[in-house]
Image: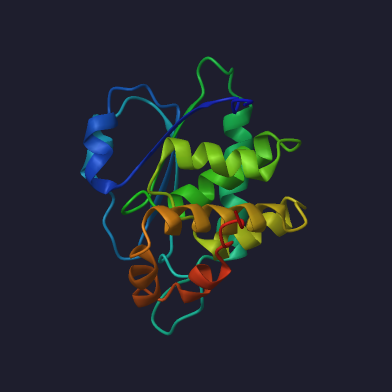
Length: 194
């Protein structure tokens, strides 16, 4: 399996203090619009950081900010600056509130951009290996798939990841539906027969 040209760490807010000494060069910080900047960053060394603010939703909802194409364009631009770093120095930390949805979707797009010839199924498998609780935000994946001209490949691989997660943890479906993510549950690729 081909490795991305940078090291990767994915986490949620509560895990941020534990990563302050690992030597990250870039941080993609995804927060709800009203959430304060985490104090944990005060203990990190020098790094480049992009902060994006939107809610973890996949449809437009009154009073909430859904991920927008401009957010995805900014994270991809940030990914290009990361890819320009010497491989030995490039270490990306991506976090959102739980390290499950917005962060893993964003990471998927950044890896896909850095390795355009790499199959999406391989990328999503690697994301799941790095973060076994991954459930990438489908809206972010859909926008990124278009911007990266992947012709639906990233979307199909994400649907397959949902299927893997639901086979491992069937009760997750009810949790995701209760959180407004029914479209993702319905999109999950069912297990292959046999």
